[in-house]
Image 1 (cartoon, one colour):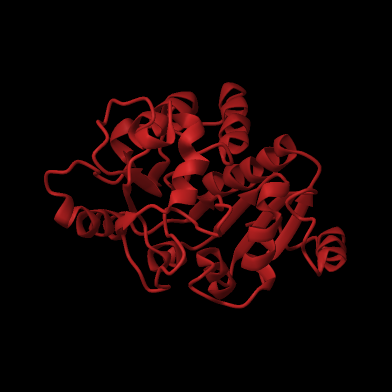
Image 2 (cartoon, rainbow, N blue to C red; image 1 turned 60 degrees about the vertical axis):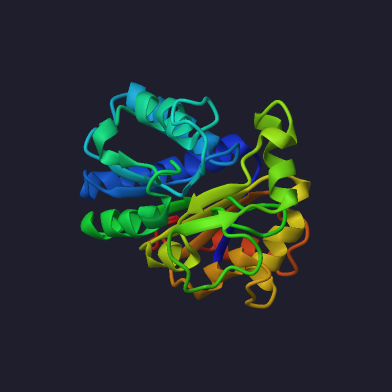
Amino acid sequence: MAEVIVVGSRKAAGALVAEAIERLVAVQPDAVLGLATGDTPVPVYRALAERVRAGLDLSAVRGFALDEYVGIPVGHPQSYHSVIDAEVVVPLGLNPAAVHVPDGRSLGIETAGERYEAAILASGGIDLQILGIGTDGHIGFNEPGSSFASLTRVKTLTRQTREDNARFFDSVDEVPVHSITQGLGTILRARRLVLLAFGAAKAHAVAAAVEGPLTASVPASAIQLHPRATVVVDEEAASMLGELEYYRDAFENKPTWDPVIL
């Protein structure tokens, strides 16, 4: 069972995860972070940026983005190269050369997944993977039906995912049809998983991922296979969890020797 932590706000969630990352970096300055994009992880990056401004040094931290659109120019404002640079690399003071994003260019796309897998393995693996969750239960761009053993590869996006992401574009027709994403098997290799979700629209997906059956129809249910997975949600996203009171009790009575998240 994943650890579930219910917080009062997105800001509180960001502070909680940022604190865990700061503890990780204190003992491992060159830790490898798995970086999600979209609205969900923004509170974490903002909380980390506040800590950096207060003196936290993250300059040796390395990173691997979860995914990238296929066929979108690297310099496009909605390419994940651009988003990671603007939301993570610059405000956190990371070395751009140490932060990797899947290669979504059409030229060489046939081997891009294999190359990304090799780069992750060469780094020693991801220490803490930040995840969001789609309304259909996807993580990364692993759409329903994705194999739990899947590695980084090209995926066709569902209409629902494209509609969910259309808010970042002028229209849904501008959202790319394909992506390159870390696979579920890739994600499960990370030493720690932290999945965040906010708002009532994510409640069904969160409940299915945490308490539903282990099924490829809900790719995020793969976190049930991980020995060190934490789910951080606000009250609305937690509203459909059947064991909600137990999660609250478990967190309130967490042993002092067992740190939050790490």
